Image (cartoon, rainbow, N blue to C red; front, side, top):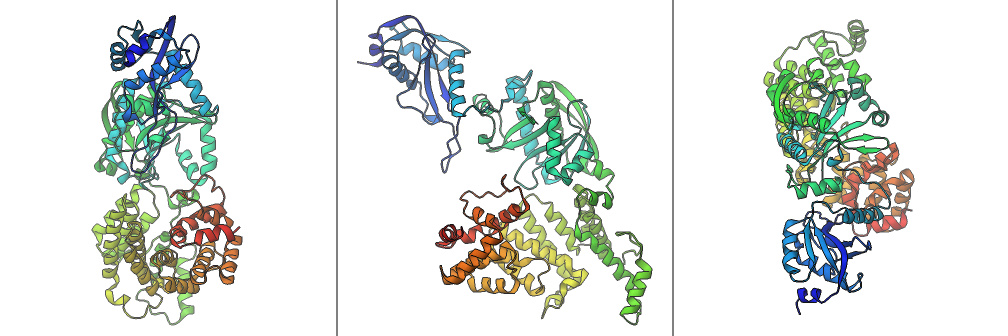
Length: 630
């Protein structure tokens, strides 16, 4: 007996109507080697009784969804919960499914009706979802915004895709304040910054004023708390598992564009009471901004003010944008007051002292000090009296200006420095710090190392190193070499990273740059325990959690669970117990977790992140830490 005959033999309930559809469960399944997905199942709900029936196989993967599941669920529901009775009418919203059921139920007397909306089913599923969410209200989707339609979202999604593909974060950072001069909306923010240079979060941040930008850097927690009161705009690209379920369904059902996997555009306004979605007008404003930024080229940035006419869902829009802090750079004292301070800029004063003393025949140290006191006493920091004597000094002055700047201006000054002198290593440091990929950073730092060698001569680095860090002209080389070591490590080129760190310590035995902190984890991972132990003895400070936990691990590798190892571990845990917690965390992330809300926890997280690979690859170490460190 086939399924149709079996259904036909069931008595029909007059006036009984069922609504049915494939439904995605409100949770994600993540499996190795494939994208996260939401399981689907077919559900029927009786309009008369409110009972719910599902396919006998339960949930399945989206790609395994078959119309036959609806028929199986029909039989299961009719013969089970409905007591052996079939409906007079079924309602579905999928045209292909309606055709399938119409053919399968031919001759049974059950009518198949295609309906755009299935309110009873949706209400039942919403109650089911709410139970799964334990009463927590879901974040609304885009279509919850006033006046927002699917076609408007499609246009917005295309704008978001263009913005992502333009990758403006290759040029601008979150220190580059963009003023939106037009179009002006009273409820829209007047300033924005581009996220993405760090490669962790891509999108836009928004500010209502320049004061808000400064406040966010001075005291982020206080600023965000205050900003929420008026509704804080946010636009980011997120994995599908981090966007509202309604948005995930919308993108799948409507085949909306996504620039790359796991980069779904999420635009919201955040209030103390929760998240709201943008209205049609607000979404149109943001669409225009995204399209204008996507059309922005570096020539526009170099001018500091530019205009783009773009087509949006609501028609053509003229966007006028500018970089106010590029056009009118804040004074270093202003930057310092707001939390922007680059210690490297202080070397400008030392360079002025060197130029003043050059060529002077001063008999002794007292004479030198008296001359310096007379010349520089009362001079504000950063004031330059003595002009550069060479192209390299002129280029270095540009770098000092860059250190005393923020954002894109640093890049422009660094490029100008290289044009002035190709031997200016600090210019390569500045460009590498603004680079958007590890490989680009490596190339720039490598070029900087060669520039630094040319600037001071290869012979400077031969033989025994004698306080090279104390020589101002050598410091740019040190900075490039340390940056290169870090870039090698970032790229997984561990041997080259180790060699670079070793060279740094050879040339700077006092380790003024803290190179040992970069070298030690690499040595432990490489299994160079003897060298690691020597490094701990030479540079380790037992009062710092980094060295305390390293000393404990080195002792465990050498002695196992012995008295010395236990003593070292007890001291480490007493110094900062949060490091132990993070080291035992299987899912330790690359970014600071939400629970790291104190300075002690921040230091613990940084330490655990640096040492986690060494602890994990040491057999028995984490078990020992868990058992003995409490």
